[in-house]
Image 1 (cartoon, rainbow, N blue to C red):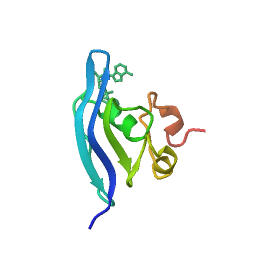
Image 2: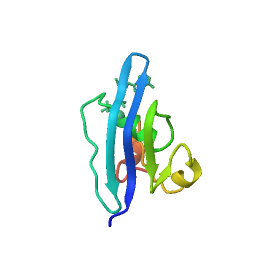
Image 3: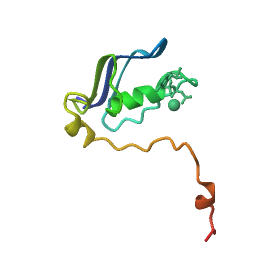
Image 4: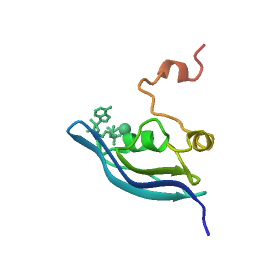
Length: 99
Ligand SMILES: Nc1ncnc2c1ncn2[C@@H]1O[C@H](COP(=O)(O)OP(=O)(O)OP(=O)(O)O)[C@@H](O)[C@H]1O
Ligand SMILES: [Mg+2]
């Protein structure tokens, strides 16, 4: 049986009148490569913020290797590695051959 590494269960999050996440559920099993895609404003970043414990959902559950990220944040966060979305790309620093 495969281990469920990431579990989103019926997540909801509103910002005022905006429903950012409306009933998102999915499982990612250990070793699986999972693409989480959607149009601008679909709620991807908000969902990832919830799954990493940065943001509390209004309702629903977020678990990493079975640990609830809000009820058991230390154990859950020790199992998370995340490369966030940079707001500014420092292209000069990435240019090959620059000093
Ligand atoms: N902190 C916030 N305060 C108010 N509204 C927010 C906040 N964060 C997100 N939203 C709104 O929630 C909705 C979902 O936003 P989110 O950033 O999760 O979408 P996204 O799928 O990551 O979009 P993108 O592809 O543009 O990165 C959008 O309507 C956005 O304007
Ligand atoms: Mg985003």
